[in-house]
Every structure is written in structure tokens, then in C-alpha cells.
Length: 523
Image (cartoon, rainbow, N blue to C red; front, top):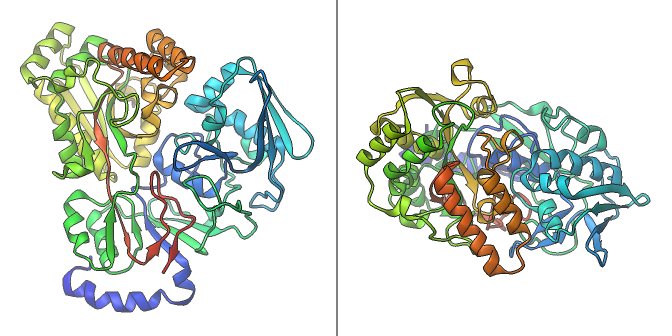
């Protein structure tokens, strides 16, 4: 670790080392380890960020979150709203030099639709997908869906990554092993060292759109020959790398180290993802004790959202928002319906009584926590303390994020390698509306990790898709939130807006969402 005068002495030498070819390399410290590189198989933010570099999408959301053609040259909808015709731009190529064909797009959409929350809606409405010549294809629906382009272009898990047909034919419940992409960066799988390094090279044959970059829309122009994700699980090591000019950009600095970073003359500390992320405690609905909704509800009286946020991001309220209900605070559907379950007086004793009345008999609760994601680990530690204080027997198991992702996918009982609960965050854009809100779904084994089943929530979600006006949509959101308090598929913990640290010499960083590596250049 380089600190103080040692860092100051090292910085000039390292800065000189950034001349020539090294100056064309962007050194990025991601929030954790890229454990897998399939942005369809998993919902992890790291895989999504990786996917946005390596794969292009048919549409991209602009800064107003409106879908714009991206790989698409045009998008036409039939008068009855049932047929979407998408024409591809000229010159689109995969990283192996092969042209992007309609068959590739169709296979990619089909794979994505098996795993994504909005993709599953497409499956339920889909009548047919078919090529129209060498450069266009049609999506025929049984019912109109105006949100199709938004679903195909959203930047959240899982992204509709356009892959070669041979890759997209991989079972969506198996991870891909061929990382040939369509985006502005080529993944150097031969240099990938999980837990240490992921490397990306500018794809010289990528043809950006002519428009200026506008969030995920517009021209994705790359100004670095190489981007290196340098995994640094130890926050002190990452902070020292920033101070010593050994890194350019740190995605999630530890809250305790922000004052040190802010004192650096060459380091800026800013919130880049202004939409934030909704923290939550997620339950496994398949096994005791959280297969019992009364036991899940019993947790609510003891939840102190402020304590969770302070543990994750410190005391600065500019970096987090409470109270937070079922939907992202500050968005159109955020509401106060039943919110007193989290804003009323906090009472551990009330939670204890509710837990006893629900029939809890001391069963162990396996709570998973990632050792290499400090913010999620902090949320999990507060959750473990809260559950212990209300009388639960907590088996707190800490592991690296990659292992946790594999573990949480297991449906076996906890005694056979499964789990009972974990803490995570979901992108604020995802949790702002019922359609893309994975945690609010109730489609059982077809749904997100935790496998909650709720015909009530599913019916309200379907009604939201059909809402004729914003007021109707808001009433449905209020009803959904009331059902969340009754069925407790998850516990909202607050909205996090973690800042990022980057060298002041970097310009063109696109704000409003995940870290994006096009448009960025070194001054």
C-alpha cells in the first residue's frame, strides 16, 4: 500500500509511465470480481457492465430513458401494433469479422427472453419472429406492446446482448463459453484472470452511430485502445492505487476513504449513477423459516433503514435516501401506501412478539454476504445483527461474490448447500416500475432468485402493463406496494447513490447510470 510521502514519490514515476501506449489504456477498479461473463445468464451488475462493453443492443435508452435505434437502422410498427419490423444498420460486424444477421438477432432475443423479467413478457405475447431478407426481421405479437423497444434497449439485468447465432443457441440456463461480441470492445478472454484482471480492446471494425453519445444511445466512440478492469478487493489498496496514479477510475470507493480521496488534487469524487440502487433483504421462499409470510413480515418492525444506509455509505445523506418503499424513491411510482411499516416507531420487541406468534422455533437462518463488495457486506452485517436481536438463529456465511452468485442459485435446502436470505442492490431504473422490478414478481420457479410466488402481485403487474393513464398506473403501484407489505417478498433497505472516484484528466464520462467506457478520453 502506498500512502503519504511514498505515494507522492511514486506518482511522478507512474505518471511518466502513462506516456505512449500506456496512455491509451484506461485502468478501472470495478466494484468486485467479474466471476462470469454472461450478461444473460446472471443478473449481476458486474456482468451487465461487462456486457455493455462487449455486446451492442438493438436499441439504447437516451438520457431521458427513451429508446432510440442503436444497432437498428429503423423500427416500424404496424397500424394494429402487432408487428414490429426492425432493419439493421449497414456495416455491423461481430468480433470474429462475421456480419450481424437477422438470424443472430432472433436467436439472441430468444435466449434473453427466457431469463429477463421483460423478456418473459415478450415470450407470453410472441406469435413469431422471422427474418425479412438479409438485413431486417419482424417480431409478431398476439397483443400490442408499446414497451418492446424499451425492453430490448434497457441497460439493466439482463441486457438483450446481440450474440452470434451459434452462441445465442446456448441453453439460457447455462453460461456461454464463446465471448464473441458485437459491441465497441472485444473481451480478451485469453487474458482473463478471475479475481484479478479482465481486459478489453477497442474493436477497430465497430461502426458507431453518427449522433453524439446520449447515455446508451448515439455514437459509442472509443478513445482508448485498451480498458483493464483491475480487481482490488481491499479498499485500502484501491485507494492507494488511485493516489499513486496506478488507477484511473474506481467504481465504488469505501465510504470511510472518501475524505482521503477528496483531498487528492487530481482525483474527483462524484455520483455518476444518479438513479442509484435500491438496497434490499431478499428471502428464499422455498424453505423454512422464510417460506412462512408471517415470519417474513415479522422482520419489518425492527428494520431501521437509516442504519443500513449509514453502514453502507456513511453519514452523508446526499449519498442515500430513506424512507424507501417498494419503488425507487423520487420516481413517478414511488408512494407512501402502507409505508408506516418502515417509517413508524422501530421496535425489536414488537418484532420478537410477531416472530413468536408466526411460529418461529429457532431454525437456523443462513444469511449470505459477499466479502469483496463492501457496501453489500455492510448491508448484510446490519441485517444479521437485526435478525439476531429479534431472536433468530443466524448462520452468517461470508464468501466472495462469485461464490455467492453460484450459491444463491441453488434451490436445495440450506442444510444441503442452499440459503435463506441475502442482501443485494437493484438498479434504481429497474425498480422504478413494476414491469422491470424483478424482486416484486411472483412467478415462482420461473422468477428471480428467491422464487417468490404470488398470483396477486402477478395480476397487478399485468394490470400495470395495460394501464390507460398515469393515474391508473400510480393506483396500481400503490396496491402493489400494499401487497409487498402483506407478503414480504423482500425488505427495502434504502436507496444508495454511491460516488465514484476518477482522475480529473478523464473527460466525457457519461452520467446517469452504470460506468460506460465509450466517449471517455484522457485530457
